[in-house]
Image (cartoon, rainbow, N blue to C red; front, side):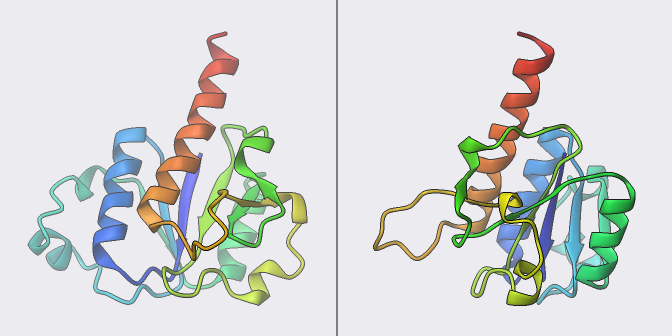
Length: 155
């Protein structure tokens, strides 16, 4: 499994997600430019001492990321409030990748267009809610996928 963030904007969210990925043993990819500095010096200054343990990848564009993952035979799930399927209605596999959008604007329309609708998933929320914190959303999806994988390998 893998977590991917599209142009993240809030450093503490990315830091929390990176820590989650280290602890879950999954890689983190950033697609496009984040809104903050990810240099080794900046990461060290932020106190992210676990960053050295993170399996981390950068992709300049969505197209490059998509091509790389599809070449590896991986399914890419977009996590979006516009998904018609909830995450608990999907059978995840160890090679799945979960792409999360920007904190303020989500994933752009050009990524949604042409993506298989059964691979756009959502986390249910109260009608009046706008969104769930990004690092919390990642934790919800990742640990459900890990739970499913564990139940298949250790029934």
